[in-house]
Picture 1 (cartoon, helix red, strand yellow):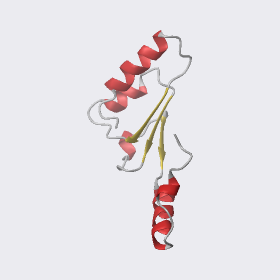
Picture 2 (picture 1 turned 120 degrees about the vertical axis):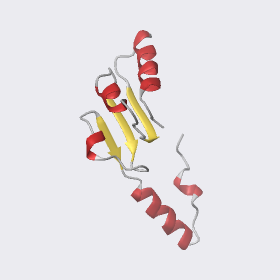
Picture 3 (picture 1 turned 60 degrees about the vertical axis):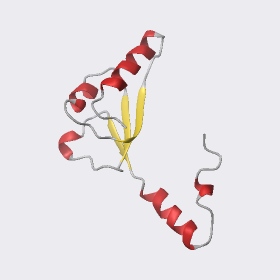
Length: 95
């Protein structure tokens, strides 16, 4: 979850201090409260990736933000349930 963005920025700065050339931040939930948008927009983080598990209104979107849909995952889970398949299979082979 990315709420205010300050923890992400601190972690990114620690990675840059250890020699990282690029940092991409990812989270399932992009809460983006308070000054998070400005915090992330003005950070050294190259890209911020969140899912659409929470709505991201237009005023919280910025150039470095990518919002990924979870719809294909939910659709496949429903398909597995109704075809007596395995929901666990959605996550096999992923680390």
